[in-house]
Image (tube, each protein chain N blue to C red):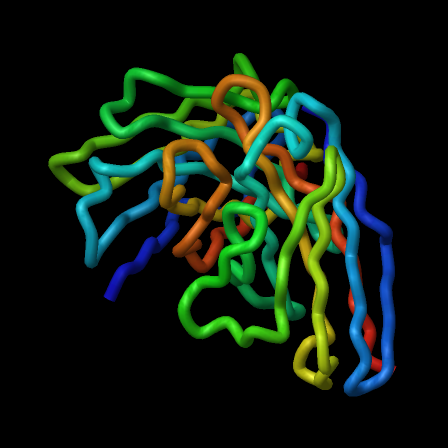
Length: 120
Length: 110
């Protein structure tokens, strides 16, 4: 079964850091761009960041650029989102998703999501 | 990186058709053949319904269709059913290599 599973979410204080993981199974993740999308409580979907097949290209939404970093370990079929200097507005469910054609936005599958809560 | 514009709500009676719009610019929807639509039920993960403007993944009913004219993409749900009640989001390839989402539309089946 083609699947993505996120982990690493939790409660963190403002200014703190968290590292999310996204484990792929059922397919060779090194052949795909992977994206991170978040959804604040009661709000819509927001694209956050992506990383290309070999990790050499990464793009970020303006609000997280300089604070978040994507990476991947293709040997482990895993992708990561390092989040530093966290703010209350970063509170959200974070999803990883596979892009089925470059960076087209054709996301399938999605992970189940992991909740990040930034609060003192 | 401005969000695409969707109406906050849409509604229709069972059996009717409803169309949800998704308006962007020449930098995203207008300049891209890569527009996707997602359905999200409360507490659930988004589900791909349409990709590349009008293509349907396997398993998605043909009641769902997509189209695009200029910088506005549309999702039409025909023969509305109760289970279609959900939030719907569009997205598009934008800029060099990033993606932008619409704000979402809550579809109510009356």
